[in-house]
Image (cartoon, rainbow, N blue to C red; front, side, top):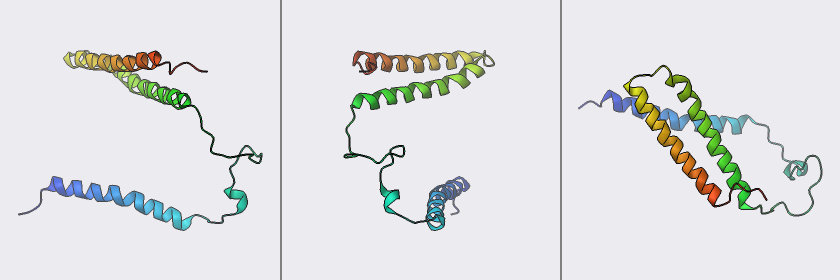
Length: 124
């Protein structure tokens, strides 16, 4: 019984996908200069020596605000190629794509309304 060529191709791609980052990281570790000094170990604060502890807790709202920005920025990345290509797809498939994109936008607006209700968008 011979292996299916599709399975063999999948195994080769899987091995390459695992080996490539391991080889790249190993080569980087071997080739990079390694000269740790006390000055390189301190926290860098725009050329000013840090004062106090570097473990400062921030309000979780800053992270949520940044996460929402990333989500809606990614939305724009998905919407742009769709809008450019939609004009050329004025067939039955085009209607399906339009409905699919409207569902996508609906869920994003739903998430935005939820964040608005939880007052994540208010900057204090």
